[in-house]
Image (cartoon, rainbow, N blue to C red; front, side):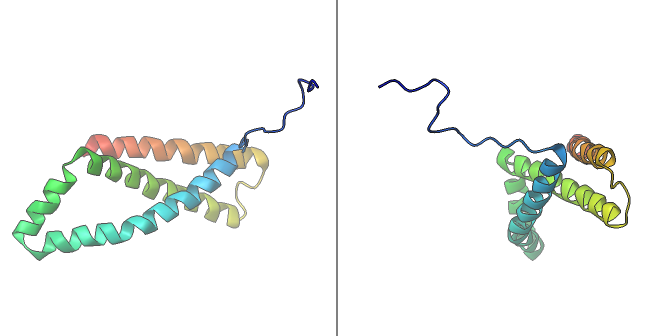
Length: 124
Protein backbone atom coordinates (compact mmCIF):
# COMPACT_ATOMS: atom_id res chain seq x y z
CA UNK A 1 0.00 0.00 0.00
CA UNK A 2 1.43 3.35 -1.07
CA UNK A 3 1.39 6.40 1.16
CA UNK A 4 0.63 9.75 -0.30
CA UNK A 5 3.71 11.94 -0.59
CA UNK A 6 2.12 14.75 1.38
CA UNK A 7 1.34 12.59 4.43
CA UNK A 8 4.08 12.66 7.00
CA UNK A 9 3.86 10.82 10.27
CA UNK A 10 6.80 12.60 11.83
CA UNK A 11 7.66 16.19 11.35
CA UNK A 12 10.43 17.80 13.40
CA UNK A 13 9.49 20.73 15.62
CA UNK A 14 10.28 24.09 14.16
CA UNK A 15 10.46 27.22 16.20
CA UNK A 16 9.22 30.12 14.17
CA UNK A 17 9.30 32.86 16.73
CA UNK A 18 9.26 36.54 15.92
CA UNK A 19 12.27 38.59 16.96
CA UNK A 20 10.46 39.76 20.08
CA UNK A 21 9.96 36.15 21.13
CA UNK A 22 13.65 35.38 20.75
CA UNK A 23 14.58 38.41 22.85
CA UNK A 24 12.15 37.25 25.53
CA UNK A 25 13.53 33.70 25.57
CA UNK A 26 17.12 34.93 25.59
CA UNK A 27 16.24 37.29 28.45
CA UNK A 28 15.10 34.33 30.53
CA UNK A 29 18.03 32.13 29.47
CA UNK A 30 20.58 34.84 30.25
CA UNK A 31 19.02 35.30 33.69
CA UNK A 32 19.25 31.58 34.43
CA UNK A 33 22.85 31.51 33.19
CA UNK A 34 23.79 34.42 35.45
CA UNK A 35 22.18 32.80 38.48
CA UNK A 36 23.92 29.48 37.81
CA UNK A 37 27.28 31.23 37.37
CA UNK A 38 26.99 33.15 40.62
CA UNK A 39 28.32 30.38 42.94
CA UNK A 40 31.33 29.82 40.66
CA UNK A 41 32.07 33.53 40.50
CA UNK A 42 31.76 33.85 44.28
CA UNK A 43 34.12 30.90 44.75
CA UNK A 44 36.66 32.51 42.42
CA UNK A 45 36.37 35.79 44.31
CA UNK A 46 36.77 34.06 47.68
CA UNK A 47 39.79 32.08 46.48
CA UNK A 48 41.45 35.13 44.98
CA UNK A 49 41.03 37.13 48.19
CA UNK A 50 42.17 34.36 50.54
CA UNK A 51 45.89 34.59 49.82
CA UNK A 52 48.45 35.61 47.20
CA UNK A 53 48.65 31.95 46.15
CA UNK A 54 44.88 31.85 45.73
CA UNK A 55 45.02 34.96 43.59
CA UNK A 56 47.72 33.40 41.40
CA UNK A 57 45.67 30.21 41.12
CA UNK A 58 42.54 32.09 40.02
CA UNK A 59 44.58 34.10 37.50
CA UNK A 60 45.93 30.85 36.07
CA UNK A 61 42.42 29.39 35.83
CA UNK A 62 41.07 32.50 34.12
CA UNK A 63 43.88 32.54 31.57
CA UNK A 64 42.66 29.25 30.08
CA UNK A 65 40.82 29.58 26.74
CA UNK A 66 37.74 27.79 28.10
CA UNK A 67 37.51 30.24 31.00
CA UNK A 68 37.89 33.18 28.65
CA UNK A 69 35.09 31.83 26.47
CA UNK A 70 32.93 31.36 29.57
CA UNK A 71 33.70 34.95 30.60
CA UNK A 72 32.69 36.17 27.16
CA UNK A 73 29.39 34.25 27.34
CA UNK A 74 28.74 35.63 30.83
CA UNK A 75 29.49 39.16 29.62
CA UNK A 76 26.96 38.69 26.81
CA UNK A 77 24.41 37.26 29.27
CA UNK A 78 24.85 40.21 31.62
CA UNK A 79 24.57 42.80 28.85
CA UNK A 80 21.63 41.12 27.12
CA UNK A 81 19.76 40.62 30.38
CA UNK A 82 20.34 44.25 31.37
CA UNK A 83 19.28 45.64 27.98
CA UNK A 84 16.23 43.39 27.70
CA UNK A 85 15.27 44.37 31.24
CA UNK A 86 15.48 48.06 30.31
CA UNK A 87 13.35 47.30 27.24
CA UNK A 88 10.71 45.60 29.41
CA UNK A 89 10.75 48.50 31.88
CA UNK A 90 10.19 50.95 29.03
CA UNK A 91 7.28 48.87 27.78
CA UNK A 92 5.83 48.69 31.30
CA UNK A 93 6.02 52.50 31.36
CA UNK A 94 3.92 52.61 28.19
CA UNK A 95 6.73 53.23 25.70
CA UNK A 96 7.26 51.30 22.45
CA UNK A 97 3.99 49.39 22.65
CA UNK A 98 3.21 49.28 18.93
CA UNK A 99 4.25 46.22 16.99
CA UNK A 100 6.75 48.16 14.89
CA UNK A 101 8.33 49.76 17.96
CA UNK A 102 8.49 46.42 19.78
CA UNK A 103 10.25 44.83 16.81
CA UNK A 104 12.65 47.77 16.54
CA UNK A 105 13.56 47.70 20.24
CA UNK A 106 14.01 43.93 20.08
CA UNK A 107 16.48 44.28 17.21
CA UNK A 108 18.32 47.07 19.01
CA UNK A 109 18.54 44.91 22.15
CA UNK A 110 20.03 41.97 20.27
CA UNK A 111 22.52 44.00 18.25
CA UNK A 112 23.56 46.29 21.08
CA UNK A 113 24.23 43.32 23.36
CA UNK A 114 26.44 41.77 20.69
CA UNK A 115 28.28 45.00 19.91
CA UNK A 116 28.90 45.79 23.58
CA UNK A 117 30.07 42.22 24.21
CA UNK A 118 32.54 42.38 21.34
CA UNK A 119 33.65 45.81 22.49
CA UNK A 120 34.24 44.53 26.01
CA UNK A 121 36.15 41.55 24.67
CA UNK A 122 38.38 43.80 22.59
CA UNK A 123 39.06 46.05 25.59
CA UNK A 124 40.16 43.15 27.76
